[in-house]
Image (cartoon, rainbow, N blue to C red):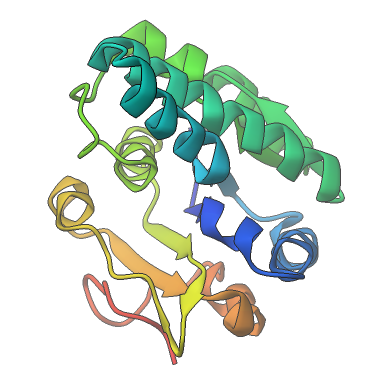
Length: 200
């Protein structure tokens, strides 16, 4: 499988007016014809699981898989609003979508359920899922699109940095910086061996 870049769309963009439209527009503009795989975050779907966990005291295993299903829900929304995107669930579907010139958006639950690669804790965030997927598909770069908190995006989870495959470029963009997405998806490597800071 040849995926150049994994783009992880944080669920936090759904909390900012107009940000979701900016992100899906940028994915459609810059993603077509490139070897890009989109991975959704959890956003309000994951937050609903956390709330249910607090109220009903459900087990961590159930919460883990419910959070993964929340990523699937977000994937459907991204596909619905991104021109040229298709929903994929397994590696062969990713390759077929890329070969067809489409933008694959991963609903990861079935794949994760099959291989169960991550611990069933809240440390295994959707960023960690994206890092694991980027490693498996052999991507050279991962782009995290995160909602801004003031002038800065949310801080990177230390568990994500530990999960990031060695030597993989990591770039963080906010919805206000999406004009840089084209550069982040370019085929040429980023000069630094590994970049984990915000662009700009």
